[in-house]
Every structure is written in C-alpha cells, then in structure tokens.
Length: 291
View (cartoon, one colour):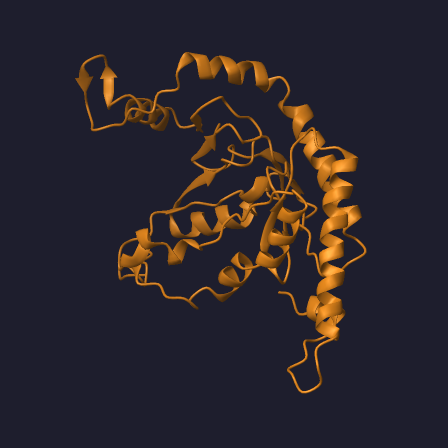
C-alpha cells in the first residue's frame, strides 16, 4: 500500500482497482472471502462467470445460496456454442445491479452510442444479434435440466475413478453447486494419457496449457517460469475429459476403462525399470505427494 492507503501492484507499480474471480470449469470461487478482501481494500469485484451458468455458492455471510453473476459489481457470461448455455455463434452478456454501470455497458457494446449517431465514448461492436438471442431463448428452458445431467455425469466419473489414486478428480466443497462446464482431472503423465486415449478415439483437451503469467501478452509484467509453481505444475497435469449432458454411462465407462488401463500400464512400466536407474515412488506414494 502507498502512503494514501491505496493498494499497489509490486510488479507493475500501478494501483490495484479490482478483483476478477474466475468461476473455473463451472464452480464458483469462494466469494465471501473475496468480497471481504475487496471491501477491506476498496476494490471492485467483477465475476468471470463465462463457464458457470447457474452455478451456486452458499454464502455464510448472507446465509443463503447465491448464483454466479449475482455477487460482484458485475459479471461476464459467455454464450459461445460449447458453453452450458450456448448460442450458434459468438455471444455473451453482462449482469449487474448497478443501473449506471448497465447503461455504460450498453453504450460500450454499441460503438459508444447513447442514441443513434451520438457517440459519447469510444466503444465496440459487441451487439448480440436477434437470431442468436432467439436460439438462447429456446435453449434457456433446458439449462437447469442440462446442468443437472452434467452433475450426474460428474458423479459417475467420480465413482469410476474411485479405485485409483493416480487420477485426481475435481474437488467440490460443501458450499458449491458446480455445473461442470468441464470435467478436468489431474494425472502425472498428461501428454502420455492424451496420446493413449487418442488411439482409442477418445478426444480430450487441456484447459489451459500455458498459465496466464507466461503468456506473451503479459511479458511486460516481467513474470518468469517458477513465479507460480503450483499453477505451472497443475497446467502440466490437467486433462479435460468428455463432458456434455447427453453423455451415456456406456461412453463414460469406455473413457474410464481406457484411463485406468493407462494408469495400470504406467505403474507396471515404472516397477519394471532396471536396478540402478532412479526408481519412482510407488503409485500410492506418488499420489499422496500431489498438492
């Protein structure tokens, strides 16, 4: 903090003005703690709810369940086709209870116009066209059902992987009702597993392979590899498995069987290494070292 009590970034030397909690993969961040921190330092809270349509969080402070996009000063939602609520093209929305902010957002999305041909500020062309709104209006009626199906699919994945400690499944706290836009596991050999599943015609993804602080866009902040070791470690371990509401038990069993076969083969190949080479720890020991 500077002499005037303003929070200053050690990296950039610029004032810190806001916190952007990301409700990653469809699970809300711990908003009570974030809002308390923001209140202490006089910061705005802008929720990234792009993957969290109708995800819920139990606020101890408010003593009730709150939905993603309802707790910060504003929130961003994506309606990209692959999202839980997706249009058939690019689309998105901002939610806020601040009427002045809502008016500013409306202007920014429409070339900064307060009315046609009157540009009060520089803006963008971010208008949601009517045909995309129509698709979303129809699909909105199914969102609750689709989210519940995603939760059921996540529960089934958890059951299928309960027999191994070498597949780390998503952790869902008691205060969270996640909607599982993605079902992301952690494994020791990320690239090996992805290649093995591809041979079985099972397609996966990595969300996200390059941590934000190592992106070229943020070189000016002068972060280096090793500055966020846990973030970098997790980026090397995560694999996004098939997840969508219509996923069947049979399809999930096929995915899980293939992953468990890979884990077993990996353990066997490690145990068969010749004496004299560096031996890995046992499967259980390696699993217990995850942090």
